[in-house]
Length: 353
Image (cartoon, rainbow, N blue to C red; front, side):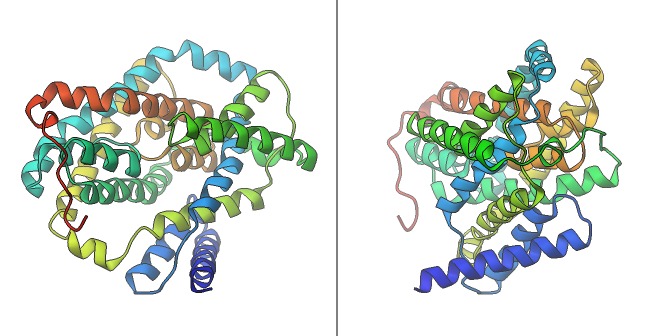
């Protein structure tokens, strides 16, 4: 009963925060507003919680909406830009890896902890890998959470202030909503998500439905659009989940690590921003879309930002998907190559575990 009350409190606070940000006409209001409101409530001591299961299920709504941007013409364009996708992903990983050494020195942590905290990846994945290589998972999880939240809050507002927006229409909301068509897409997307997660892809709850929706759209068919209110509900749930990860006890235990981690995130954002600008100049692609595609945020949040700013969602999605794939593939072997001595040590127990 208490758990249900905490979940209802969390989603209620998240919805109020999203509505408040929407009334203020702020970028990505439903997600950022929910995140800020729930995080503030948690830090104030309120028992606001979020449901991971609800988040996973509503990732399907976001994935379907984003997949509708992959028209046949867009799909061909993405294949032509494959070198850009790989180069951008490798540059982001290189910047994160380079910042791990100063993070280790400033925060006084071992290299395994610093490495997996600095690489932009999933909080659970990076924490698990850090523990496997002798690092401490708690600081890694907090660093990854701080990165996602800071990027989600700052990036849309900075881009709006700088006038980095485009004229791509909000396709998902513009298309007619068909209940049978949407349910068919959602059922197929959920099956793809379950398969992806079973195969070890943590982002599968988003990427499975996205892949199904993109494949159908790229074939020249459209089963249904996604109305704005359904997208807003999904964003509130995602923002509530991010905000609920904050609490006073965790931040207190890691108060010496958090400042160094915040500085590392700011430097990572600046480095990725410079890479994005350089790639946009070299390739001639729109700067706003490339900057979002190279930003060290989550694929769902950055793609939703692109959608709200009228930017090329398909380009942003494919840039982030390429990065996710390369993070999963390259992060452990590159760490073993650069830090053989520590990589050969047995895992160390984390404090309190």
